[in-house]
View 1 (cartoon, rainbow, N blue to C red):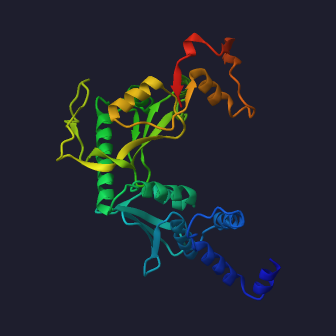
View 2 (cartoon, helix red, strand yellow):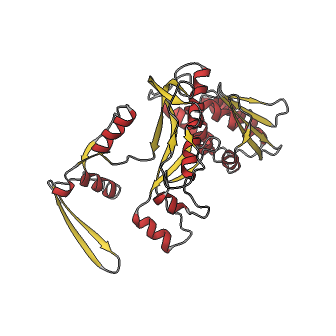
View 3 (cartoon, rainbow, N blue to C red):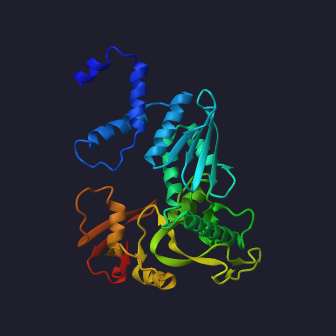
Length: 360
């Protein structure tokens, strides 16, 4: 540090700052995990987060650096007022004013016209580069399918077909004035939020009775249920995926179940990919339901943890409050029923009504 200080004490701060930016723009050639390098990388990340991008130059620099960190390319337009973040399958155009303010952000997938992405615009205007970087990762993950660009494009086309079908199903038997809670409780797929730009399609499919009561007693309160993200991922095996929507007559009314076209060779293609529902946290599910899902999809679900139901209840409710090891050999729980009484429950290792196995 003393040698560095002597070397740069005669140089202006602007040159030192430029050198720091230049060094930070160079991503490591491969993930560095060795102990001597980790403190340096951590320090560089902290500097990048601390620098407040206010000018056009600093915003461009931040976008270039973030793009390289995510494995993407970045180019500045000849006019210097736009930054292009590119990959083989998509590109993002960020238009900026001379003072660094964001004018617009457009996203274009391979073969599609660019469209304005409001979520990307909001993240950049709020200087939320972490959220912007997360969307860049989500966009790149859409194309993590084995094969060439054509194969990756087919995988994205299959995801679009699934999203259109899910959205059409969500509109079946739906009245115009239905609220979000009603959609979750009684909708055919729950409360569905279509994919916008880099934000994946989300389905909110469960909400607890306590949350329903809170929503009824406190109108306007933002209660959040259980969500799942709809996406596509690559695999070593081929699966037949649709290349166009399969729902038959989505405008048909009534309570009948929706009808889908068969996966013929004209409407589908064998791809090294499958559709995935991603949860934000582990979801407990009975082993019989897991077996039924595997039978319907033909895909073996791995990485499962078998636990009794009451152990999952204890872990999910007490893990954040108690750091010590949680033992459920003999457990006693108190539940406060507001304005009523206290319910005291005892659990041993062999409760007959809780002995079935659940998978986390």
